[in-house]
Figure (cartoon, rainbow, N blue to C red):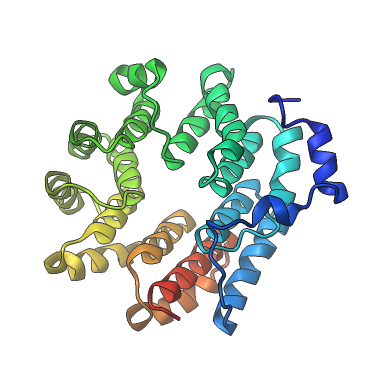
Length: 308
C-alpha cells in the first residue's frame, strides 16, 4: 500500500465491480456532452491511445485530453492499477492523471497529489523528481514548499524553471514576474521552459506579454526550443499580433514530432475550424501517435468553443 486508504483492497473492489469505476469517474463537475460524428472520431482516437499506446506518457496525454473534453469514462480503470503497482515515472504519470480527474473533489484528489509531492521530495532519481515537480506545476499546486522555493532560487535550469512555474500558480505578480524574467535568458532551456509554462496559463500580465513577444522575436528559427515560446505567444497574442504569432508558430510544422505536438496543443487553446480545419486533418494523420492525440484534443476543444 502506498497511501492509507488507497491500497490493493480498494483497487480490487473497484475492478471487481463492488466499487463501480463509473461511480469513481462521473460526477457533477463533468457536464453531459452530446457527441457528434466529429467528436466520435476524436474521442475514439484518444480512448484507443489511452488503452493501447506503446508509450506510457502517450497514454497520459490521451487521458488528460479526455478529461479536458469532459470524457472521463474508463480513465480510473486504466490508471489506478499503475498508481497502485507502478514505480517511478509511470506511477507519477498515473498519479497526475488521477489527480486531474478528481481536481474538483479535493478529498478524492488528495492521495494522488500527496504521492506526487512525496516522490518530488524523496525519489532517488533526478528525472523522477523533475517529472514530479512538473506534474505539480501542471496540476496548479500552490503550496510554496521550502524545497520548491530553494530550487527556484538556485536550482539547475530544469528544476529552477519548474519550481518557478509551480510558485507562479499563486497568481501573484511577483511570482509571475520571476518566471517571465527567464524569457530574457540566453540559455535555450530557460526560455523553452518559461514559454512552456506560460502556454498553460489562462492569462498573463502585460509586462509578461512584452517579455514573451520580445523573446519570440529574438530566438533562432532553427532551434527546437523556440516552438515553446512561439506557442505561448500565439496563445496569448493581442489582436494586432495574432497573425504574426500564428505565422511563426506554423513554421514549426516542418520540425520534429515534439514541435508538431506543441503546435497542436497551441491550436487547442486558440485555433478555429475556419482557419485550421485542413491543418488539423494533417495533424490527425501524422505518423506519430502523440501528435495525433494532440490534434484530436485540439479539434474537440475547438468544436466545443464554437458550440459544435
